[in-house]
Length: 137
Image (cartoon, helix red, strand yellow):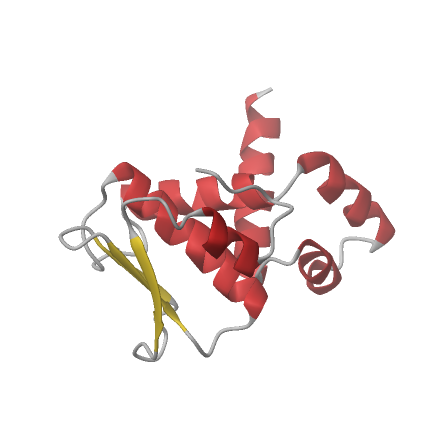
């Protein structure tokens, strides 16, 4: 994908204009932040979200698009959803920057997420990935 963690939501939207996927904003049903429809190659993002949440949702749904995952029916515990959450966290959070912020904010997840411009969920997913990597070593 032509995006990286330093980009704002607007910069990400501009960077993907040439890709064969359409991104639109809409008012989605409560609790649904974003959705990818593989049949039509369309990503919908709830327009009521904060820019940090839109940014995270865009990367998450682009991950579903890139892998050709099924349309809008992501079950929270499905393999595709787990992969999208992991890849989103690893795309948006630099481990070295995270480590610095972890020390600077004494582990305060709200402050760290604000600084990284990610949601609490993405931060939590990143922490889970890092914990799994440490347990493997």
